[in-house]
Length: 103
Image (cartoon, rainbow, N blue to C red):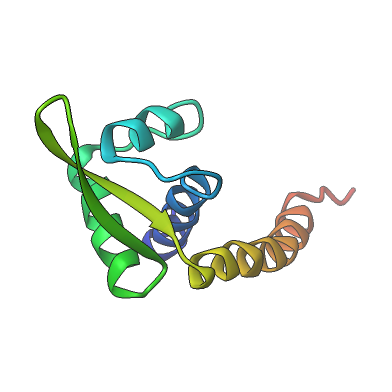
């Protein structure tokens, strides 16, 4: 798969994983597992990129005596999901065109 396309898909997947409630790294990986395998190093690179782009915020909270980072989606992150949904309509159209078999 094209690296830029995959990067964009992963970004949106991570945003979707925290869309309904704040989450942390291990849980995000676990939530995404049914649709995509994601390593910790890849996830944390994505999270840093999304934070730098203003699509999520980070807060630390104590959990079982350790600090855990929780990620929260911002309005910009929610807009990115909506943009993705619109863009995906075009991707589906292209896919159908490519897959069409002509006699």
